[in-house]
Length: 331
Ligand code: ASP
Image (cartoon, rainbow, N blue to C red; front, side):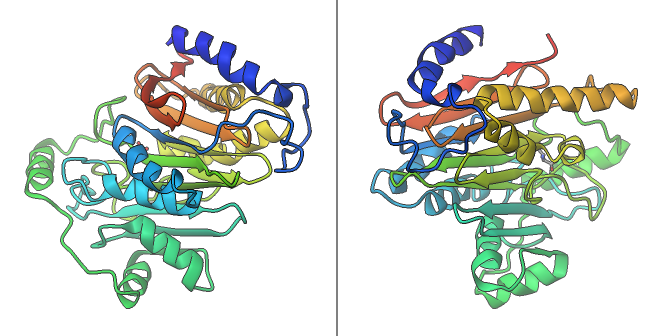
């Protein structure tokens, strides 16, 4: 990981040094003209980000929009029954319901979100429909399902045999103990900068496994799970949603970039604040994971997490698609 950071500091930051030298200045497409920009580029959380990036790249390399790319990219993970923390095959709540959360944001600050949505395989596309075809920005529960069905999304059973078996096992003890980095949660969050210099992001999850019925985490909450400002950058979060909401994490990362921080430093600042809040509340953080990834208008990126074990995937023309271990705070 150290290696990544060193390389990143040498290459990423050096290339985009115009940004570091221009603190407190929002980056528009115009004032970036003199800076070397890495675009298109796409980043996503966790190891399943590699395949999701490939799908997004199919759109980005044809000069498609970041918005289309992030929707397409995360759909891959939503549809995969083997991925037990997102979409179809996701682990249910403690009553056996698979409830999904997702949100999407584009370069014009258009936003759409669904929470606690059942029976729809692609909550990210319902979030996009909320954004584009409803007068609202967020629909939840039964209302979100009714809206999705009216939009033509098929109603499906999302609880796979494997997930149901695991849940029944869990019911024997009903012990709710999220374990850091073990597959009981993990969200696909994706942020991209397209060939036109526009940023968008998407975030989708089945949330914490065996959560209380009705629990909603950070992932569908614009500002917490995802934030995009086309003049500055984009950020997306994964990990313990309650803690991310507490500091409005993704918005915090973007605001740090607005005030001159690199994406790396901005992610570090957000994770540090989360740790500080734990300490203020004297709450145990030993079994909690939080991770952020961030991207700015120059195609510079960064990532940081609370504990060892978070990785993310990055794809650009020059360096291809790679999985990188994020640096972490608690060593
Ligand atoms: N952030 C998600 C939630 O709290 C879970 C995760 O990313 O691991 O619902």
